[in-house]
Image (cartoon, rainbow, N blue to C red):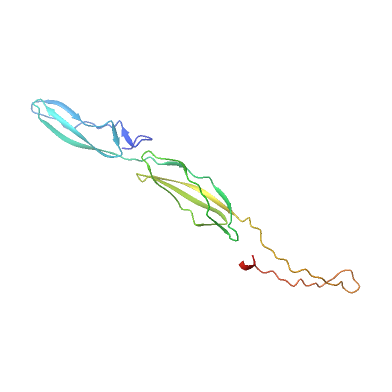
Amino acid sequence: MSTDAGQCFATGVNLGAPLATNDNCGILTVTNNAPGQYPKGVTTVTWTVVDTSGNLRTCAQTVTVNDTELPTFICPANRVVSTDASQCFATGVNLGVPSGTNDNCGILTVTNNAPAQYPKGVTTVTWTVVDTSGNLRTCAQTVTVNDTEAPTLICPANRAVSTDAGQCFATGVSLAHRWRPMTTAES
């Protein structure tokens, strides 16, 4: 049997009746010590039969209550961040925490699979909430990393040249610089 909705116990349990009650001089009472609420787990109910002479006999019946209700929570909002300076990834992203985390029998763990570094683009982080009965629920949060850092450019030195003979312009000017990636020491 499962717990009542939103509760960590069950009520209204139908125990049935003892399968056989018989006595040579007659039965006076048949009773049990059943509680109004059965907590999650196993509860033993003791049945007692008393005959008209005051003799009694007992037997035990177990009622097992399982928590099958999933925990509830709201995933943190998606995040949009920029790459770290001079990197093509982001670190130290503040993901926030799930809100409204609740369960009828209690939360055991709240975890996520966030990486240490988020590459440029979209990374999905999966949050998992597990209750004390092992029921779990997940949600997805995205972290979008944008490269907002402009490239570095160092122009070649200024040049002073003479005009071509008989012209008001110069041709064949060498800028004397070829493109190459910058090293860390230059940035």
